[in-house]
Image (cartoon, rainbow, N blue to C red):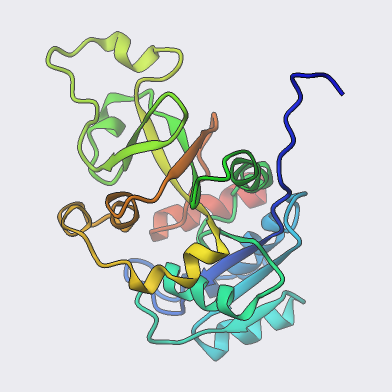
Length: 259
């Protein structure tokens, strides 16, 4: 072994997919099955292709989703229907799983999540033992996307740790140049909704108070950043296409059918 080699601690991680029955913009989207499979099954089948996790669990809040997961042979856990957020649902799984070191939280409405992105989140936790959370970002190359408040931006320090997340344009240029969108490494990054949490962090997550930054931007990750937790961020070239609206789902169905 060369003198430059670095040994990293293996992180035993479970993928957890929080899946709620109720959804505001697309009712009961987890159970939509116009492809021949419920949406949650597509997400599950993508997640099980990752190489590093020890398993995949769907954390549900309703018997109908639990039944759907059982029907396609997935691993499932019923969680508190009154859980305030997906993170709270994931923390409930963490309390029950003393055999794991971390949980990778994959959104149930991202059926096209790249399995390699899941592996990267685990690798980030392995290489950054000081980080409580790992997440991902992707370059922003379009100005209208950059200026969209629904696109959450993140800026990083030189070690790849998050400095801040915002719905605003960050960094905000004093004088705009089109070249800003073409920089390598990228100047602008979109945060992606996948998280790797260490189990010990999740066990105490309920004690982390809501923060002014979180309340202002309506971004939960700012609660943890403002509380002093280190969030390490990996950069990937492409973002998965989440399913938020009927239009999103129809486009997904067309892609599945090869139209």
